[in-house]
Image 1: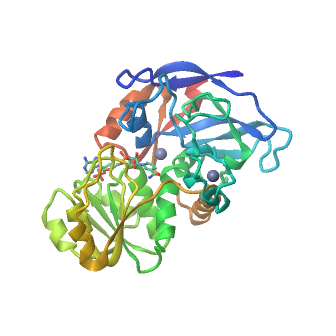
Image 2: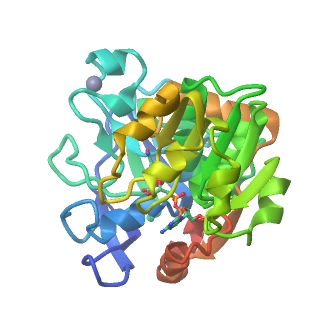
Amino acid sequence: MLSVNAISAPSATGPLERSTIERREVGPRDVLIEIRYAGICHSDIHTVRGEWGDIKYPLTVGHEIVGLVAAVGADVTRHAVGDRVGVGCMVNSCRECENCRAGQEQYCLNGNTGTYNSVDRDGTVTQGGYSTHVVVDEHFVLRVPEAIPYEAAAPLLCAGITTYSPLRHWNVGPGTKVAVVGMGGLGHMAVKLAVALGADVTVLSQTLGKKDDGLAFGAGDYHATSDASTFEALRNRFDVIINTVSAPIDMRAYLGLLRLGGTLVSVGAPPEPLAVPVFALFNNRRSFAGSSIGGIAETQEMLDFCAERGIAPEVEVIPADQVNEAYERVMRSDVRYRFVIDIDTLR
Ligand code: NAP
Ligand code: ZN
Ligand code: ZN
């Protein structure tokens, strides 16, 4: 076992604090990663506050991880010491079920092993990336191209793939009319990626406070959802709506914005159910869907796409001791657009 420095949540209500956690010894197919940066995802906050159900404390969260390979097991072929790598929301899956074989490990029929708060193969609870090192099976370790700035790469491992995957699945491309609801960590990546895919992108944010940024990311249009006339003006407009809001939204109002055959995809994961009025689906034969992160091959494809196209998240790098303050700012929608912890401040 390796003892490493970390930041952990002691309880659902207590502030996160410095701690020490254990990592397993590097097995034959494992990679030891010296973590450099870890992004703060809203899912980390939902989890540590027990909003998605009870969890075992203390817990270290963080599933947007980038760093350098520090050691590899004897059978590792995909990565070498010194490589710049990343880990996202999963660290294992069964590899045998239909979904795993289709490269959709996130939908493993036997349940994927989450980067944190999952039961690992040795029976311990997995601990996430707000820590100096992690040991991960090589299959779940991604190559992070040098063209992506180091500190900006981490959010791609969750916010990037979670928005890229539905954009690709619903065939977003030139001419597709896409709306992105909520412009936080996921939302700002949805805007950048949909623009890069050639779509005609509209941002739906609570206020117009971030309009200049949205237009700079390439959106053609930007509306405030606090203004009721927005929902009249944009009725029957969009092919695809990507909802990234961490709280419930008024489904009737947003579904009304879909044109014939359009789909509202929720990647936002509020603890409460989203109430879907079925008549809002009948009109225009609309669909309501969900999407969870992305498979390993697709995550690599997304990283390579971002490197080729010069796409990177907007980040605010913070020292480890500012995590609690960052959580409060995320809760106030005061994030531009992802907090990333400089893990060197934990060493
Ligand atoms: P975030 O940075 O906090 O962004 C969420 C945005 O939603 C905010 O910036 C805000 O945008 C808007 N918003 C927040 N509260 C709102 C409210 N009460 N009403 C209306 N709009 C509100 O969070 P994130 O890290 O992007 O994560 C977003 C959600 O996706 C979370 O629920 C997270 O758990 C989930 N998630 C899901 C997956 C998946 O695989 N499906 C993966 C990662 C995260 P404006 O200021 O622009 O209004
Ligand atoms: Zn996440
Ligand atoms: Zn499986």
